[in-house]
Length: 476
Image (cartoon, rainbow, N blue to C red; front, side, top):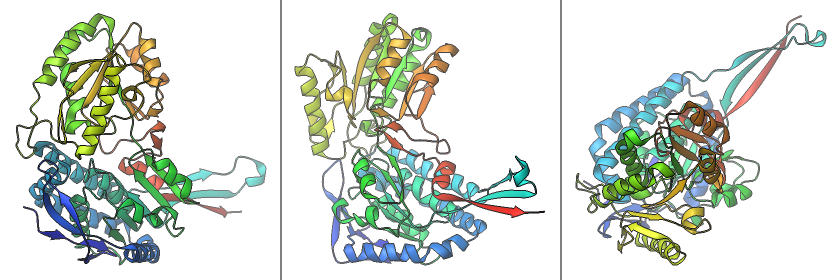
């Protein structure tokens, strides 16, 4: 179902290019297809085209932006199977999960189509003192201008969608650099956008290596950088100059299981397994730390180990597969090393720990020291840690004992505990009675501390991609 090669997109147009980038099947390791590789001159031309497209995009009416987004929705629906298969191959994502990501791609563009025609301002009462009598204030949102996007490998469709769709809705031209290991989804999105009547230069999709794309960060013609990836994002922010920067940089998400969850422990365990091992744990909000009340710890551990050991691992193209490969062997080897370090420091492996190439077994550990990498850093793989707690405040303190703060989960039927978690947890989001891995594409999504700054979720991204412009009228 994959073509032999794919072009990149420069100023709305497909470019075949001479240099080629191999895209491998992440399960077999074989080259699945090739994509055209842009050079430095292509990046310069893309930035220049986006800069020149700023005014035409600003003048592109909301109903026209909506029509573009609605076209994308229909074309993605028609190409659902193609998109899912490409995602399965390039990211190693199990096919049923790949199909789910295509659904989210469609939903994200649908939300953006709705939001495109309701970007509103407000009327401000300026008559707050005698000196401003007769003055009236009004605000509107205007596009920030050309924007740069850098996206990671783990959600090659939906994380691209969360940047591209709001940019179109807001009226911002953009240059996108998808992850070089998973460029196909972004290029298919570019192919669909090329079918529309977006102004010339409105978009470019350039699957470049990061070392060749520094101009996306430093060029002052680009008014915003939106980056999703590792904590290297903070270094990019330092180089970005005066442009606005939003960062989504991951985490080591924790999930609390309160002492009142005994009657529905099986359901809790099911969600923990999903949250920790869905797409091999390669998610910014994958469950990495599981904190369980003393009263439930032993029983939850027993049930959780049994569920994890029963997970079906293997070829992601098979519908029965739950656990596919990590993005490459180096990533799996790195995480296996962290497991070994934790074991050497006294941790106990409850199940898993083995590896074959890029396939790392679903792994559970307990008694992991607080200073171990698996506790302090983002694992970004199929590994979860079990810890026990005596009081709810103890659990909150452990969750906060992290440099990250993206989302946390809290299973509790005690409203006071839910509200206390919302008050006290240093997180961008607190998910009650589900895992932190939960996300709906219209909700605000982003973190605190090392997890980044700014919020995605279509309406919130549109706000970041626009400026507030004030008009004051003297009436008397």
